[in-house]
Image 1 (tube, rainbow, N blue to C red):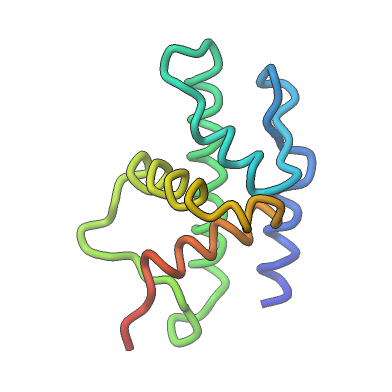
Image 2 (image 1 turned 45 degrees about the vertical axis):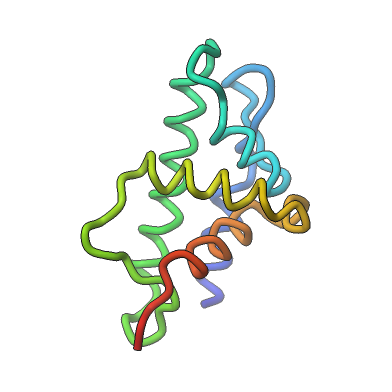
Length: 121
């Protein structure tokens, strides 16, 4: 679990959301929500969406690769949801829970995943 926390911390260092794609930074969950909800008509929509998808897939893939099946608290449903669906639902979930917006971005992401896709054992 310590390896997971360290790797997730490394994923968020130096990444972020700002006015241009060269300075995307994630200081907290709110920054991740902003990056994942850039409107389609905004010049940075494609960059922000790619950034968000990459972070979501990377974090979950690392979790899947490092947490043994018997210790997982998040399980992928069948059929597997699209990246866009997960991203959009994460944004809606986060916006309805303002108490988590100052949390580390991946803490909020994994809280959402655990609530939305819990393992049924």
